[in-house]
Length: 162
Image (cartoon, rainbow, N blue to C red; front, top):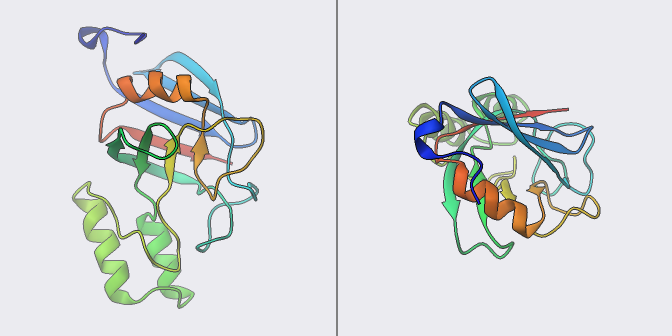
């Protein structure tokens, strides 16, 4: 059951606090719901490379809603970010072309390049919160991702804090 009627929505946004293992949903400045979450299997620090098990940190947006996720439902996040792309070039993890592709997608609010040494396919999805088990995603209980999925639009801002 949605917490708000569509005509009551202002600007829906999400804040994730990794240390607290919480996902908070805001309508404008008002906190409307808090969920417990699970993170990547190596949750300390921001995501650096594919396979490190870390959940990224920084500012993202929802680029897609997947009703057929293998983890019940999922919301795709715009990782890697422009900052990640710049870091990737400096560390020789990605090419200038890959960086340019990521930056262009971000500027157009589209899905950034997902298959690079920086990693990708970071989602908010179901599957449970008993422990940190994902490859870098944010997991909720299935019934809670169902609530979130109904409310969060494509384009919503998602901030991930340490």
